[in-house]
Length: 164
Image (cartoon, rainbow, N blue to C red; front, side, top):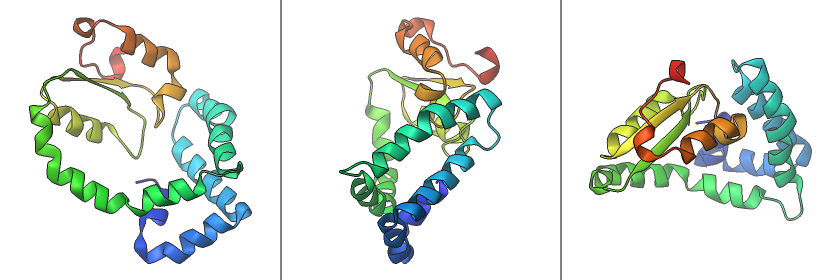
């Protein structure tokens, strides 16, 4: 998990997480730290796009009035229980017979290609497209993602990064 999500989701750090959330300067520092972590190792063009487009959107949502901080805190507070519950039910996905497309950023250091392959294996009719993008493929490469989404299902094959 991203570091800031781990911090907010860990019941042992509830008071620390609340302190970050209650101090705009500290919460801003935490967001900037996580932004650097997401950009780490990314190609320069993706780093620039994240700094110019994505990070201002995310930061704006947290500093706006009303802020998304309370909702995000509530979401992360339940994260471990939700993961455990979903993991127990993962076998049920084998019965899902509808087409599933997984469009994944191969450069995501948190939800990496191993996670994508695992999810791909859970759905009997899934296709996996790994793009040379990061955590937010729809922001990193909207044109590439749109191309995959708009392709007829039979035209999309399981592809690796070198194929894109």
